[in-house]
Length: 450
Image (cartoon, rainbow, N blue to C red; front, side):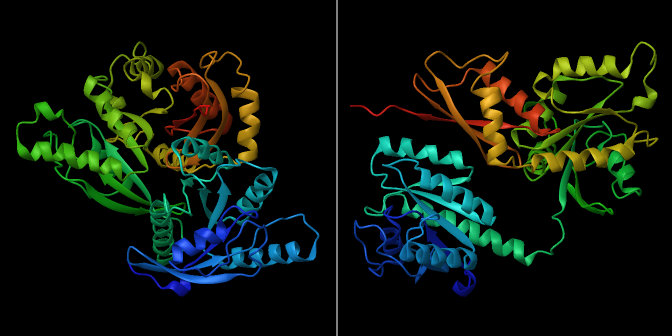
């Protein structure tokens, strides 16, 4: 995708003497900025052009930023860097992996977060495997993209440029879209003949999809757009999923693939189960596909209106059995409905909206640090990883679904599953991640060998 460089401005920022100008020269392919060990050599903004993977963008080199320095030259450098930040679409924040995090880095991180702009962290001077491990500590500032690089040797610069291009292209796509909220992608999944098409028709209020008691009527995923005062929805009705080993016809095998692809592009999945037949192993398998795809999940128990002996077969009793067979979905809400009569179907879309809001939630770093000190650094009732493996800090890396990076040190890497579950439960409880799967990634910092 070729883009106009005048619309794509990327600024290189950072404290003095971290290698900003070296990186600038490396990216533009010529020696434009003066490079030296003395801090503060680059004072004014310097512009250059970069062409990478068919995309051209402008690059701005700035002087080393010292926010609280009252001296005339540093104050002017900071002002020039501030102008570059305002002008730029993306920011490359250069830090020194050898030195590690400094107090000035802490101050700059707060400044950069306040801009609301996307920041790629270039952990410079990473020219060995041990330093690459050290560079992971910069994730603690809450920026999703951290790239270990060596501007001097060119190591990791290609990956950094790929990240820049991806974000620039993403920005152009978002700019071309209408300013209204993006549509919410909702997949309705379940084994054959549980009432997926009937539920879709009931939500839409009209017959858009063929409804038939014959299992496997819907063979393809059918997208239908629904606009409500609150949001635009893209409803994805999927073919009934069957185990691959038990699908004899090619069309049925394709329906399984189509359903899984539908889940991969969905934000929220309604996992439909049959109240009369009860929860089956295949229901759990289907729900597992939705979890693997990172969807937020609402479990809808259909045909509740025809369940007999409701005095003994209560909704809470049914849910207890469902939870037993789907232990991995203890965080997913359960609702009993009847797609045929419309019973409680009107409650589904509000639940979907709440689930989508939660899956897009990004916890401010200050709140996450406070949570870490209270719930993780000194857990109550949680199991510590091991006596040797230490949890240093935690940061949110991304959303949709919310993903957190836990930084550990000492001992062997590998959080105990009970401790990981404890952290996930506490995060969900603290920040109301309703109906959303949460993911934890461990980054282990090894001790440098003497």
